[in-house]
Amino acid sequence: MAIVNTNKTPDRAAPISETSMLGWLRRNMFSSVFNTLLTLSMAYIIYLSVKGILVWGLFDATFVADNRRECYDNSLTGACWAGVIDWLDNIFYGRYPRDEIWRINAGGLLLVLWMLPMWLPRVRGKVLIGATVVVFYPFLAGYMFSGGEMGLFIQIMASGAIASFVIIVANALVGLTKDVGLDTFVLEALGKTKAPDKTQRNLLIVLAVALFVVANLWVSTWALEGVSWTKWGGLFLTLVISGIGIASSLPGGILLALGRRSELPVVRVLSTGFIEVFRSVPLITVLFMATTMFPLFMPEGFVLNKLTQVIIAVILFNACYMAEIVRAGLQAIPKGQFEGAHTIGLGYWGTMGLIVMPQALKHMIPNIVGNLIGLLKDTTLVSIIGLFDLLGMLRSISKDVPWLGLHKEPLIFGAFLFFIICFSMSKYSRHLEVKLSAGEKH
Image (cartoon, rainbow, N blue to C red):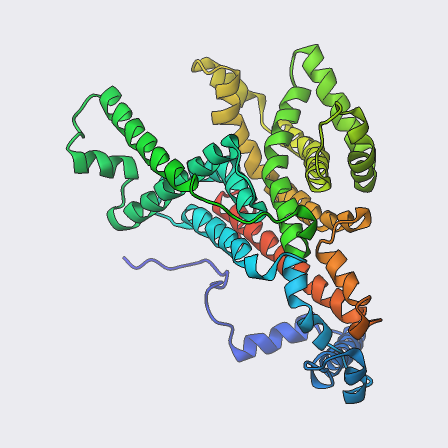
């Protein structure tokens, strides 16, 4: 018996024909005299805007010149992108020594390779990958960027970072080729798949420790030239501050949110007071307090450089805002989830870590990403307290003698960079929403 499809809804995947397109335009843009006039007016405004931007920024623009006067000689009405191009190294790297820029590039490439397995579908242990990035990468990258004498603690953390990176890369390769985890592959290669669980675990620990020892011996031979934090700047400094802030504010916000919901009065009051204090003042005030007042409360001889103080201030400030987002997400979880977790014998941390928090984080994705985008843009405030981040470098172009007074082009270029980064974060958050079924699927 033939089945007749009575669903009249058109197939979303089907291509739109020319007739249906004309019908859509007629219904939505030319359905009345007023809509027709509004459509034509907006089309004309868009035409003028696009034409003006293209003429100023492309057709009449100057891309090669030694100074701003040459830009004027070439065109009085076009943009002078030559100044931006001349300052590209400073915009991206600040005053970092040019012969040491490879360290920044290597650190960025290392981070990309480290996190790449998180987006590969057949790779196991993605939570562990994210945890190792947060715990170990900052110390390894910090030494690569700053160099100088390596202390014992930094040597241990850098060795752990190298060992973790090797394990993660090997795990990704095994997952892509064999579709199994690295632990399973190693046990099969050694013929220990039928050994007791304790024996297998001890064997894997021994191999990891041996890899750590080898990494430690290699790291102990490193001797990178020291680069003062005062030479850090540009987009590099912006990403360092925002990256550490993003990686640290979410865990800090979760702890503060759980503390605010705690049944222990002392923990609840301290968490609530801490959150309300930081949320009641603007970030610029927190930055000034961190760089001017904080050293006054420290013991004599205890010195933190300004960059470290700024990073701590950014983390604490954004952790408080993140705590309120997390608290709102936890309140959206029905009480039945807590009760169900308790009935199967889970304690407080098991309930939060395995049942409640994963569900809450799904609903918090838009707000979390919005807060992180705000954090990225708020890092431009550090230029007010003397750090030459991306905005500071862009503003410095107009003070350089050959490009004196060049304001619009550098700021437009900086806005374009921020748009690319923020738009990418927004699109990825939407991808996560759809993947985790946290939002509507269109």
